[in-house]
Image (cartoon, rainbow, N blue to C red; front, side, top):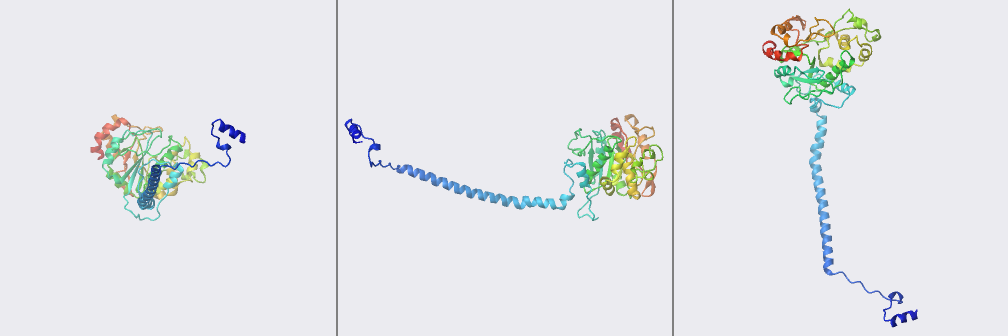
Length: 391
């Protein structure tokens, strides 16, 4: 060890401290005072910003909660539990309910007869269509004569059809969620129940009129509203037809729910009040019998509702429809009238064609609507409506 150390000195090299016993390392140089001051200043500033940010966030958060909670959250609960939320008509007719959910919801009805709000009874005009409403301009003129709080409109068309009514039209956004409806099949009655179900969601709808795209009004709105609102009966055609197109369509598999003596036939186009509308949509007794055992050549839309309501509430039926139809030409479908058929004489013939009973009194005003009219009939109908039909 000494030999190596002495050799290093003799060679003029400084000995390494690793080889010097008990050597002491050189002390570290202190940081400059200026650098220490800068570091401390940055630390203090950063700490201050952090403290200020925490207090600011807490303040803003509390302010936000204070502003939102009492008004927004409380308003949501108040709105959900208010009478307005229950009776206000749906702003949009579109919804995600299936038929089972819709009819269940629509079957709700108040058992207290006095309404705790100002209720103006309305007529629900329900249009069952394949697609467009070619006679819509005539109906627009008809509705111009009525206060908007006295009626509501619902349209059931094929789900693939997209309506193009302008925002100024009474038919704008009045299409309900729909399903395909096939003539003579239960899907047709399901579409009618779907219309009733959607219309029943508005507690102010009191009378329900089923119409097609080929129907026209025969009277002005004031007369239609008065006629429906003052009637003691519902206008559902229902009669016992002993022929092949009546009793001949009966299936014994319907017994004992429906017997042959109870079997009835009537027009598809009806006008009923709210109580009977609920009867129709809440039915689970007669529906499966007609679905399974009234298939072509039994046309269910001519038998289901007339038979069921005659069994349930025969005393509430006028046993006639308010929609004029011409079956004189024979066949499975009534006559259709086009442009060449529309004259003043023709319309007056419809208006004066029959006498009937209204509230057990003989009257000459028997029809409020008529069908079937082709799109070509629109122009002459618009020309004659003010003088002949009163709108």
